[in-house]
Image 1 (spheres, rainbow, N blue to C red):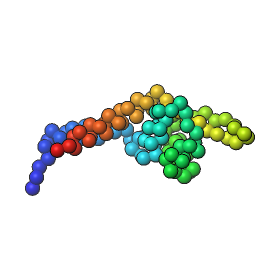
Image 2: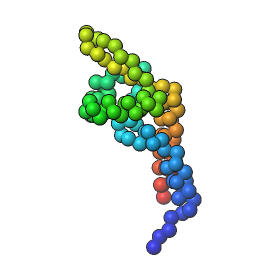
Image 3: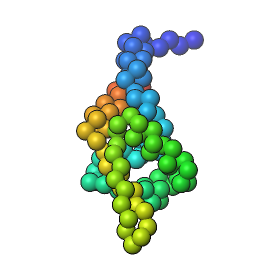
Image 4: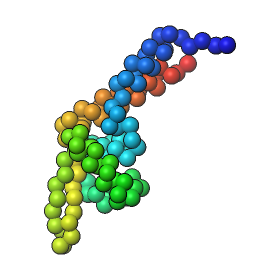
Length: 111
């Protein structure tokens, strides 16, 4: 029977505690990652990039909006409604913290 190093266990546990529950969904994390390197991205472009359905992406973006991690601007282009999404300062902080926690977790898992 092998035992885990208590130090590694503590580091892994601390890293897990730092993960942002809002960003633990693939689509929400992916959306913020994409938005972090852009001024704004349309709903249809995010849908394509994340390979999501309208309904699922809409629900996931709504959760990010409720957490104030992104903002939405709606406009009409050629008489078609278009939603533009952008990451907020709070979203940048959350993404940075979540990625740092993932990095810590990966470091704790290395032999």
